[in-house]
Length: 622
Image (cartoon, rainbow, N blue to C red; front, side):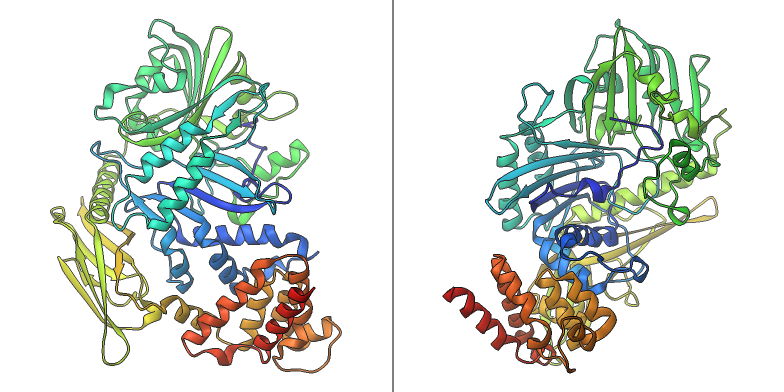
């Protein structure tokens, strides 16, 4: 395990299944969520699955292939569940109809009774092979499911039954997932999602996970919030509840947000090195001679650091260089050992009190603080990207704005928790009237104005009231995703916050997703490329994307033009069938059925249904 600035790991790498396996189920928890980042998660799994199908998966400069994205989202959406803080979904720059297929993945949760927030950042993954063998993996992170380029941590824990390793029991994690899922606010988890989560937790309870090498003890630090802020402390969770008189020699604390709860740990340590954000250190103020304070050096060039280390991670370059601190790390040295906490909790009363958080506590050898800060064995330490910082008087106006933003955040969480409902009624023009209502009263804060709109209709805002109506909405634009925007004024400055809330959708047309599909697959060429992805043939899809059907036919040695299925699809169809991809023909049947439902069969390449019948009969007879 390394925490050096040159040692970087991408989330996409951590999500990659073991050889010969594919994703079966994934549950992730996050405080904030970027819907576009969520869209790219299924694409990641699809790209991994199809990596061996083509030597060149496509020109990265061409951007994300929308047809590839559509197929991957539809294939993996049912396997992915996201537990997100109510009111924590960011509003995307524009609406993407493809989000229709991920609506069921979104589960808003709220920590009950404590006034805290849902703040863990965990991935629980189950992979399965062709023989139905399963393995699990857990990712413990400090980052949310967003595109933020902050410095964060990720701990990858793979399933293991090796008695020589320090093992973390999966049952405790399963209990935590079950508890947090029970906090879902309306519309909550569907019956299907509930059954899938129960099944995942059952298999998770029977396995263990190997702690990183070099640590002699490991434990989950799973917090579900406490009724009283002072029931536990940062010291308790970081050290495992050691008595107050057992003082520590020194500590290294890395946290972007701080408050006076840090004093509990500082009082029990001889020396403390504190890395945070400048604005947080300003609010905290001078902590005395025993506390050294640092911030990230804004001039530090990660690419130069990696070159000095003799390697390059392949991570973000100049356009997306890491900036800002978001990692949460605590190291406490006592006697001949060091305890290390990595996870989601900030050094605040919320982080180690009211909030739901998740982390891992590891016990290792003395000297870890020096190795991580100064570097060892040829690796750079964190000090290479840090600089000392002397606190300044805090910006009181900025603090007031932050308080107002938190008030708006709590208001949006309350709106989500009230249980939004959206009822659909078809009108005479085959469009729909949508009526939104709240399940209970929510008081808008004084001085705040709020508007609501369907995420799919940016020009149709409504002022917040108990009942809202949108008329003449096309079926493909019906969505349970509502955008709420609130604004207030603090010291003459306008403070705004927007969020996406998920409503319970009732009486929506059954063919809604099929209409979205027909809208996204606008041409027969699009459908051909989509069929290629259904069959797992990346090479064919790229040929179709950049050369059209003529280019694809030439690639496979065929002549002619047009959209005939037998020209370009026969070989990949047979290959999928012969290789035992039992789902391939089923996926095509599903596509044909959906297009038939919305009278869009004209988009299908000629002869497709006949070709599928011939291939199915050939495979059956063999």
